[in-house]
Image (cartoon, rainbow, N blue to C red; front, side):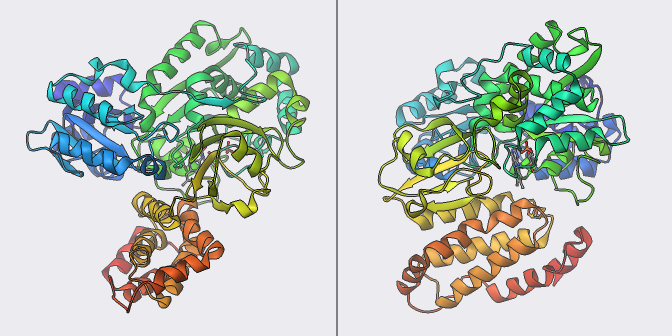
Length: 594
Ligand SMILES: Cc1cc2nc3c(=O)[nH]c(=O)nc-3n(C[C@H](O)[C@H](O)[C@H](O)COP(=O)(O)O)c2cc1C
Ligand code: SF4
């Protein structure tokens, strides 16, 4: 083990920031993180072993307990369930004689659930040793089982099992325009970097990751900082269930992303950039590195980009299964080799980002749009969309429709038009923006996709009338409880209370008082949580309570009398007590003791 750890640390130049990469290699080699490895890494990197232990415990894909040599994670997104996940999971578990959540006695295989794997347009899906397999069927599972029982290494499995399709159903301004390699960079330098920033401002480009912050303002503020060491980070965490458009951009518009990042770096005066790639997209890792190599060879990255004397390079870092790491400050923590706990703000990451240096962090699609604007100009981009939402939005459409996949629309397009294009019939509603977004019923189908009206980072999940709203809300509520990072009590305790309280009502054991309590907990979490995860965790419940009060009432009428599944009053009191403020771990421990 000593020589393996030694080699691994050497591969990452004995830096502490790529700790997740080191641990990923160790997990892949030993199917767990051996205690001895922790000691060796701590010594080799000169960091406390407690830091490593905390990191291992934080991320879903690390484990101190041995996992199977074939480590399977089944995607647990609502769309996987709609496509028959439960029956297929049962089939797989029975065939491999491995119940869900266990490691088989011979150590060959382990099966567990994980959050969405980003294949909602081609589910149900799973990961085997980190690699995604979609379109699961009994036939495909039979093939997987045979390969496992024959002890065939995953690297030798037929490649068709691992095929991930782009599924571009409708392109627009960005997807239909081929950006020649280096064209945007050349245009930016020829026009001037300040002028290019002005152009991005004039285009009205706003961030495509969800919050819609003005991109030029972010870049200009970072450029104006006194610190001269600056960083560019591309958020390719794409963890919101129902979102997969960045997967397609990373796969087929890779140069456009790197071009956008390089222009951003030149404008900021940054020499180093990172793509934080979600662990579930391991299948894209080698491809991204190959494109980086091509760009270095073509002089589009490196010490003297296109002969303009600018130095910039990009590194790909993988996550390890944590939704909250998509939140910008949690991502930066993770990139520094730590647990992905969202930071306190201010200061924002524009001022104190990666390694406390000024940093611009943008979504994948934002960088693609920026590259195209640098090449084609602001008017080309701003000619599309609405006054406050310029350009186009790329949607990941999945769920109950004939043609799931990627669609690019000018901002301002109505829900009705989108539903027609993708062949959605008998629609009950659409979850716009994923679990943290909004459930929109067909009564609101004249609603327009804009930042002001119906905002989405890309997720667009369609449900028809055969679906039960309570099943949907339950899946989302469990997702948030699972993904809460546990740092602040309103979210940690609250999401778990919400889950139990909702399950109680869903199972027909709720009373009218339970609905009131549900609403109270939901509001408490929304108002007092530390980061966006907690602040939006109750949205599925709050929006359905508001839109479908009758459904909740009907659900409690079916039941009989009060049956306390858990001590709600006691737990709620603890959460309420915490609602004042979140003062970090010391305070949390005190509350937990009560
Ligand atoms: C819990 C949580 C998860 C998030 N996940 C992502 C993500 O996967 N990708 C993303 O671009 N932004 C995500 N965001 C938003 C980021 O914090 C940030 O606003 C965004 O990456 C900024 O880029 P933009 O300005 O280009 O949109 C998430 C936010 C929260 C609160
Ligand atoms: S709101 Fe939830 S995810 Fe965010 S810091 Fe608090 S516990 Fe962590």
